[in-house]
Length: 386
Image (cartoon, rainbow, N blue to C red; front, side, top):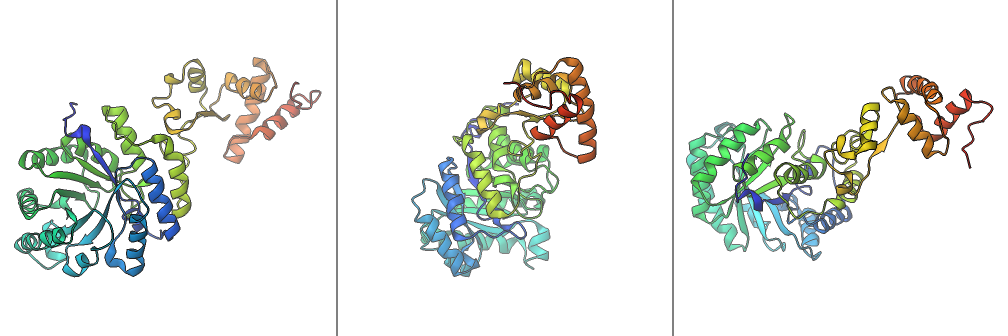
């Protein structure tokens, strides 16, 4: 698929410290928030959404502390489109505010008890007020994915005329799919020159795909969170979006992926949400291989079974022995322990390894491998060769 010139300049606006912290049960300390912001900034993430001022004085002090931290990233806060909430956004040292308002008939009627005309009037009133407070404005279209298409265009036009420089298209419930996102972004891009930002949720497991499709359709900015933290099933993961853009479309976001392991470990600790073993790119198993055919291919050339070089993420691949391993994998594992095996001995060890994995539901560690070898070769006592 062709890439537009607009897509090539996509900006990551990471919201780990706002929507990411809205993950049920997650709460960062001030020290953790400062550390996460600093690590995101060190990684080269250009924009950070760092909090909700209306939450209270402690949240505002946290925002001020991050703003005073001397980061290079552009800082945003999130606010409902209400006068009282907006007033809390002033004087915090941030650059911009996302003024959020429902734009679907479902939420306009059944959440706010209002109508479309009220939404447009509210945008016309609050965007200039935010500008007067010294803040650039992104109008956040909550539940935009379920909004009437014609009304959505009215909202974007109204936001731009009021002085907003960006419109956030929020798939608040995570109900969209990539082809629909591509279509709606193309229509919005054709109708306006305002910045367009995609905010995708992962309720159907499509947040990353929808984010990439939005970029193909003309989105200039996208929201991410580390590990995909966020409400319910979470948001589009930073690491997936950055690597997807690079490897699928040749788009370099300028973000240093070598920093991802440190960032991942930091957020995992602070959130109390460990990274799943098979989480793509950052999980322990992402570059771990067991199947004999795969290991044999990797030993010949890593590109046979790794489309992404783990070194791009400051990582490396590893081999484990299990049910699907082959004798060459066993020989490789024992060679690393300075215990040479011929193919016959390797086959006997492999049979024992398969039984071990079936019983213990994990691969044997090095000590256990040596113990298996010792049982099969008692005269050698499992002692590595000098």
